Length: 228
Image (cartoon, rainbow, N blue to C red; front, side, top):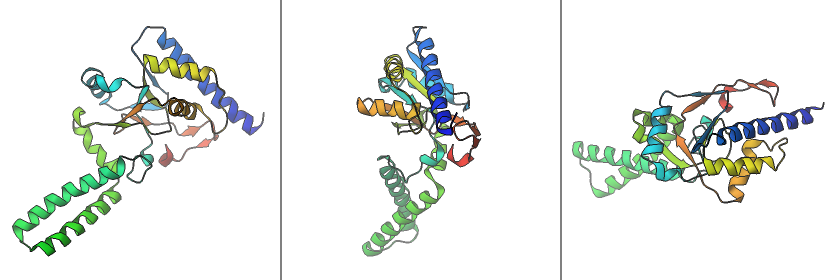
């Protein structure tokens, strides 16, 4: 069996296992299907946030699925996700406003100096937050279930997805009709299906799962912790 065939077989087997779990859960006449892979470790806030979303934020749940995990390295401000840059600008403006207001009370300046101070402080805070990293800043949201952020779901990765019943049925039907192969695993297939049919999906941040798998059956090697 060649390496390529091994990868293809592994990806197809993962897809079939995913289908099986989804179908078996749907037979129980459930409203939601929460598929969690065996190398995903839940955070202690999971059930608190999940209960809040399903009871108080149910209007947001009219989607194909909700992601509860995305690799930390892909959660930064430098990203293809459109909401990240406005988020960086917004938090920088807020901190700059606080800083300039405090500075003006301690050392009043004229309008010209105030404009320079505003510009410099905005740039300064943007650089500070870029260095700290969005991945670390959003950890502050764990202080309350009300602070968890819900955004459109980006591509990649399915360690912990909550599907609506209709969404799971659609995904299962699609996966049953395709084959997975190298560079087209089930996560890519699911995302391709969602985008092709213009279906919506959400992601909860910060992550409510940790990816603890260190060995990749696809690469037949130990994974770099940074990429998972």
